[in-house]
Length: 186
Image (cartoon, rainbow, N blue to C red; front, side, top):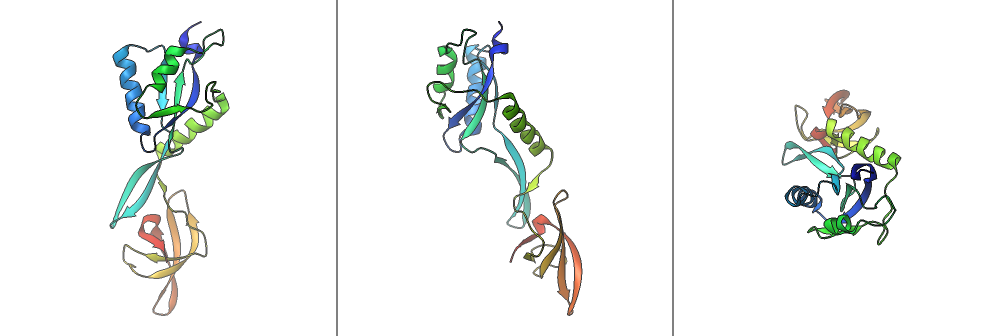
């Protein structure tokens, strides 16, 4: 039976903030040491989030599971016995704390893997705002023609990242459309 057919997804705990470094180390070691039949894929599930910092809109990657990565690996042979080479290959990588599950880690089910990888793909396609808003909240507009105006949220279009805000101009309530990054909670 081919090693690829025996490969399953496992969760590996890493040092906090070292997820991408561990991923790079595993991939680099795999190429250098020629152990392609052990580790097949390494994933750090992330989503894109946008926020305003110092008046500029920035998009960053936020990890779904900080401190954890997913590794597709042949950890067990066809006889169900642990593959010690694969086990130590991952465990001896700098920044790795260990497999989730201890001495006998349990692989993720295919449905769990599909859900996580689907979220990861969805997160790559469109950036989500870091802050979520609700109807009735009071906000302050921080950018645009209505800068420093306070208003109340009338509607939220989360898919487009836009808000309809009611602001008072010359004593009259006026609806204004703004993007998430242009406002902050009052």
